Amino acid sequence: MYEMSKWYSITSSRIKTLNECKKCIAGRYSSETSGASSCTQCLKGTYSTEVGASAVTVCKTCLAGQYSSATSGVSCHLPFNLGVFFGIFGLICGLIGGGIVFYRRRKKEFQEDNELTHQLLSETMDERAALAEDRDKLQLAWVVKYQDISLEAAIGAGAFGEVWRGSWRGIDVAIKKVFPSMQELMEMQMEESDSESDSDDDNNYSSSSV
Image (cartoon, rainbow, N blue to C red; front, top):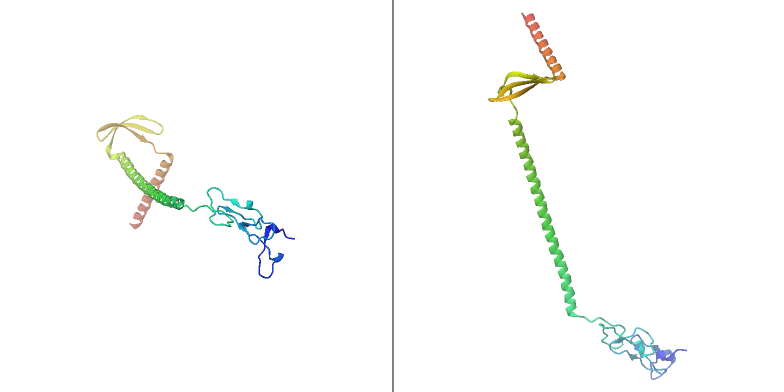
């Protein structure tokens, strides 16, 4: 048995049987207990998703801010607000434009920082070269040539050297003469012995030639 309140029949000129009854589609209902030939549509502003509905209570009212403009509605829609659309579109465009401006500004700042760093490094290298040159000049200025010194008299002596009174370019100064180290003495002795052996060889060669 079919529940007749949920069905309607399609009549024809020849036959009207129970097999021709169909359920009301979503958005429609039939509250008749029997013999219904059509389903009633849900009014505008309401909707129904139930199939085979048997009471008007299945037609639910759209929520605030939504609408259903047609009868037999199965759902409600949000109204299309042109101002809201353009507002959202403008907001998206503004965010994209702001991002591009921010990126370009950061890129420019990065390039300026790189140029400044390169300039500072170049200036630092130039300053170091100038300082090295000045230091070399100062060292050369403090190099005392032996011919500019005049020794007058020894005024003290120690284990490593002697202190003399003298003058340097007309200025009275104290001059310290450092004794050579053992290694330097040995090298000097070796050089003297080598020079003596060379001179002996030269003398022997001269004698044999004569």
